[in-house]
Image (cartoon, rainbow, N blue to C red; front, top):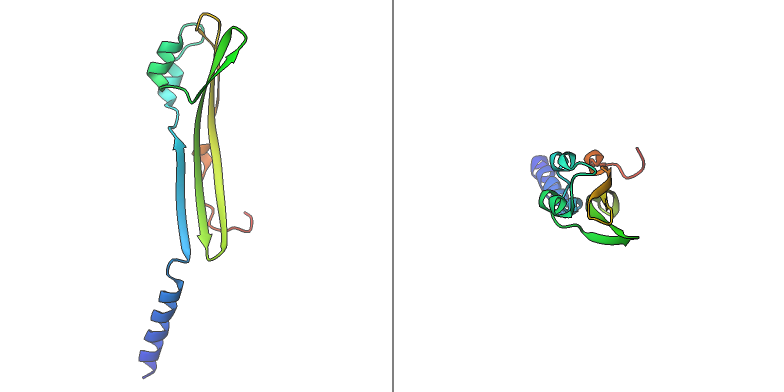
Length: 125
């Protein structure tokens, strides 16, 4: 009889705790293609070449006589156990600065999503 009680207790605990743990990953946008970004040379590439290699920007910002193409990519990982959870989110940002002729003058890239991992303990590191 104790084996039946033990099995029933384990089954009841498993039924009560099902759905208590959630792992969720969310992405917004497309990651920047590193190889395509390295091909784009400052002073040589124009807006058409950049769009062909990286796609259309998320935003075009007019600056003086030139413009900035902004590309965004976000990634978030969430861990939830009962009501205790933690979310880690990182954003990649790419800014392509063009002069008044539409020639690439500068590019700045911040790549943080590659370091985003799962943190399963919500109370610190």
